[in-house]
Length: 194
Image (tube, rainbow, N blue to C red):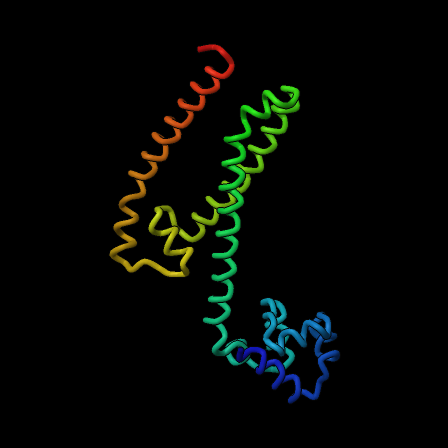
C-alpha cells in the first residue's frame, strides 16, 4: 500500500510521533499505526486533514492507491451482496415452509404474529438486495453472476442483458402469480375449504 508508506514518510519528515499526528487529526495512535501498517485506510476527512497538515496535495498522498481502494471497497460490496442474498434466501425458505406449522402447532394468533415477523425480516433483506441491485445496475441473472464474481460485462453483453430486463420482469410477475395461486390452493385444502 502506497498510502501507508506515504503517511509514515510525511509523518517522519514532519518530525511527528504517531501520538502527535493522531492528536492533530483527531484519531487514536492505534489508528495511525493501522494506517501505516496497511491494516486499513483513512476515511476521506482524515485524508484531507493529513494532506493539509503535511502541506501536500491529495493526489500525492493517495497516489497509486485509488485503484486498490476501489477494489477493496468493491470486494466489501460483493461480500455484503452475498451475505444479504444468503440471509434472504434462508429467510424466504423458512417463511414459506413455516406458514402451516406456525398456524397449527402454535396458538393461531401467536403463530400468525411469528410468521408476520419472519415475513417482515425476509422482506427487509429482500429490499436490501434490491437496493444493491439498483445501485450497481445489475438486474438479470448474468449481470448478478458477473458482479458476484467481481467482473463486468463488456458493452455488447451489457446491452443484451439490458434488453432482457423487461421480459424478465414479466416472467417474475407471472411466476409470482403462479406461486401465490398454488400457495392459496394448498392453504385452502389444508384448512378444509376445498
